[in-house]
Image (cartoon, rainbow, N blue to C red; front, side, top):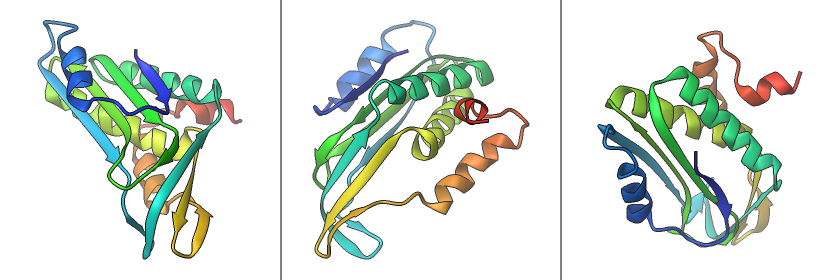
Length: 162
């Protein structure tokens, strides 16, 4: 399960091709690519800085991928998340999932990105025309995550916070 937290950019097409060619049984590859927007909460964003908790971040991402593998029949998942200073249009995150069929791949990919957005130890600071500000969590991200808890299975990091 490839998980990378890095400052350097990545080649979206090359990453998906490598993942797809890893197993001839793959019938579906589903991916999510997150990019930096130039506008957030009504302010122009000139730059975003992403920070993380080294070691803990990778452990959190590995836990959610492992949980996704338990919930759905997937072959593999790739998570690449960038840190450091990023400009509008820069790639931030890639989540890609392979499986025999699209349903499992779509569900697992959505699950992984929902978890990543709310629980993984990343912090965002935006540089706007009004100055720098830390980005707060969005209630819509929490709502997206809540749907996965409805089946009665706790999220990996939520279990360890008790």
